[in-house]
Image (cartoon, rainbow, N blue to C red):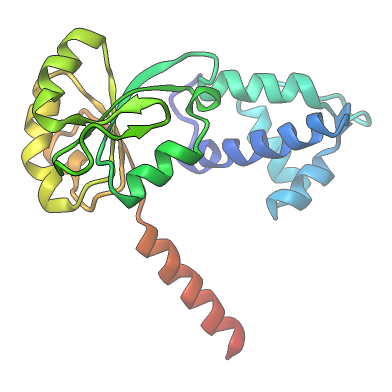
Length: 210
């Protein structure tokens, strides 16, 4: 993959992948750029530009083979590889994420869950026994983990980051509001701000109702 592909294009790839998966599950063999544009709220030209960033996948007048395009986008996203991850935080948000996401199909293997609340330690999530956060260091050193999912409050994450970084963790799915990349510029961080998303929804509703 070339380095100069914009992050906007990369962020659209999971939507292409999700839609193509639905088409394949419904027995659809091929799809046009026009149809892809409809579901992406985009244009056929934009779809072709996005996909041409990674090579030619379709034939003019024929469209894109659904199964092949889905497989190629999955490969581009790295879904054919597996990254070993740990989840820090087994509260309500952590439990929801651990329970409802199919990590195996998304490029990750969730191998351990850690929590500091004694009431939650020893409980089971996704067939995994929640461990005390005091075990993090030993576990990561022994299990070749390269990614951490953080579903902790900001004030709980800050003292953990130095430890995780020192243990070699450079990849974070971050639901806290702590700015990891500002402290460690060589990390890869995907920040998820649920409140920001809800405020955006609020804005769009208000704009439509004006």
